[in-house]
Image 1 (spheres, rainbow, N blue to C red):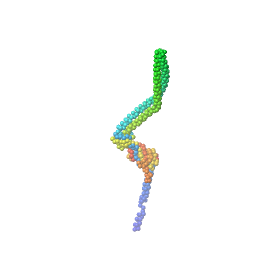
Image 2: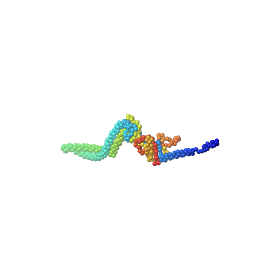
Image 3: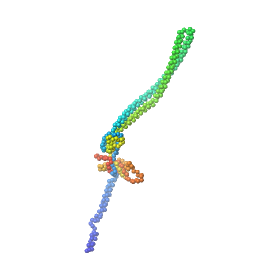
Image 4: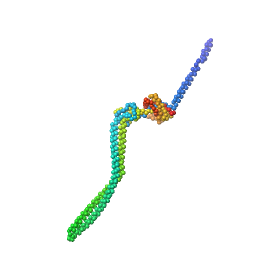
Length: 407
């Protein structure tokens, strides 16, 4: 009995428990099942992401322009509020333009004076040209005339001298006749009346000689005057002969006056530009932000008084350098804006010529001996296709970008 009782528990221990084998086989099956799910998930993830490169290091960007007046002055009025939408050409800020307007009026007056002087110079050039040519012709004609006068005067001198010789001969004859008559009259050989006739003839020939001498002197004086006139005429010819030079001088003066007109036109244009620049206008459609100018404040030329953010936006996505090997301009991109959780579409527009670190304020110097390799980021510019109505993008918003590199 005791042995039977002792043997019975051993038989119970040896008997297999129902379902134990099936329970022992379950863990490997579960592990295999979980491993299959993991592998399948990884395969799906790889298949879905195949041909795509994504990054969450992206943001909305725009060509933000600092607003600065091109001339200095006192702010007369600020015509927009901070963060206000503006249209292209809309006036944002107005400077006091009193002095600039006065300078513009002064420049216009100087331009009018320069134009009047240029017109006068043109007229003077025309008069000088005509006068120079006419003066030369007149001088040459005067020289010919005075030369003829010299010839005539010389002929008159010769004639007067010949007359003087003739009168002197007649005078000598009359003198000899008178002396002979007086001698005969002493002897009462001839009457006294005849002596008186010889005396009268003597006086007449003597007066004729004096007249001939005066004629010679007068003709010689006339010859000297004619010769002086010839010298004067020759001088006028010499003076008036460089006609081309006189005309060139007059034309040069006219050209100088026209150059002054151009200078005055440039000064007037600059003055009008300065006057126009007292109005700071919007360079395009967008939003004006960070206005720092207020009425009454003094601003200098080039001083930033605000920022202009244009409506045209784009995306700058910073991809790892290992992701851009297949990227090309024109590839399709999907963009998810964090602020809206909406997916937009776009196209790769360009890839930066260098990494972001290379264009930073202090580029890294890898030649210092403490080089640590770090995966670099390359900015990729993505142009947006279209923005849904009511969706306003602001520069700096975070974006998740995906580029289809196999398209």
